[in-house]
Image (cartoon, rainbow, N blue to C red; front, top):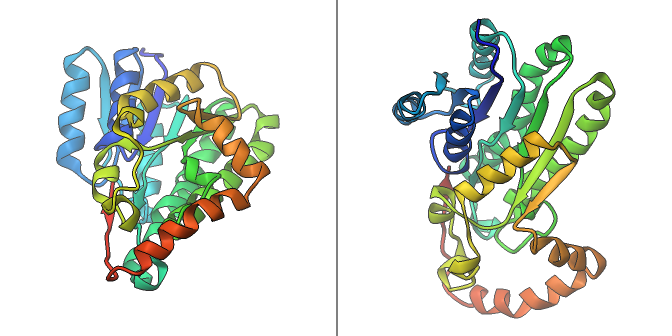
Length: 275
């Protein structure tokens, strides 16, 4: 009987999710791969199994509650345990709010980034409570602390995910579960490539040498799984910057004001991206 630990990763078809699944698989964990793109999941599963790991593919759209239920049921019935749940699925729509489509850009973004994350935890929580152990890791963002122009809805979802994480931790840690969040800065993934809005298109980006790789975030998630804590900001040097923003919130307002006025003077544009 295989008693190796089990990790469930949503948004596993690319970027942070794929890198995380691959790393846990290399470390001897059984990996449940969940995302919409089945072909990518199957390719990743072959990669993991080719390196001696074990992977279970469960195509899942986190905006669909029945599919999330199937993910949880399939995981429990196949492997009978969940040690770590990595809630990673997410997307970005970075536009001026007045140009956002109410459904595609606003409602859908909230559904994936926040409601979907909550639904995933809801589906797995009864089993986690019954087994009496487990670690939920929600993949948030530094946008959970500092909201930039054009990130209005995205930041709202990540602020919400941070609040959900804090409340959930206080609900279930007395019962033996661990709950954490990881807060990455800019990451070179499909999300970052496709979600670039007016700020990014006009050169207001993080210097390339400071942009994280998906593998960097995966390692941070692995470290968090090994040594649970409330949260982890990556890279570390964002911590003092976010602390300064919390102490002097008007500072970011002032820094962004000229940029926004300049960009607003240009013709309105739209941008969207998913991951």
